[in-house]
Image 1: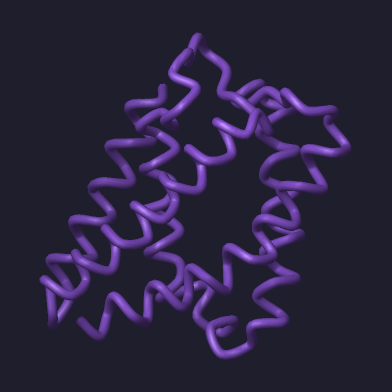
Image 2: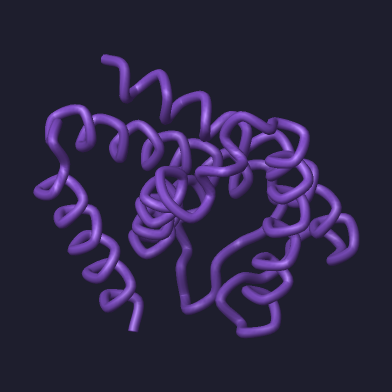
Length: 146
């Protein structure tokens, strides 16, 4: 099932790059957000905040399907989430609420496991995403100017 998520995200990313009037810039923007996401996920894994289910034992790097989800976020920054771009306070609130909700869903579905006590992990994920969504917009803008 995880390969389906990865394949779909890569197909969407490829379609965005192909449809872009500036494909190299779009590819660079997607890659920058993807690398940001992998770095953040790796830091959270190393800090022992959470882990991934399904026998994933590499505690220092997230699984490929998680990296693929970051490509989907990169695509959403230029579409569904675009109204938040110039509103960092609202982006932080949306990041906190959305990040905690998605993490709770991952826990409930068994895709992730909380290593820290669940309430602490949820609060930490919310705080992380409050910073991360505005940062993702910044990285996306900066990468798009290159």
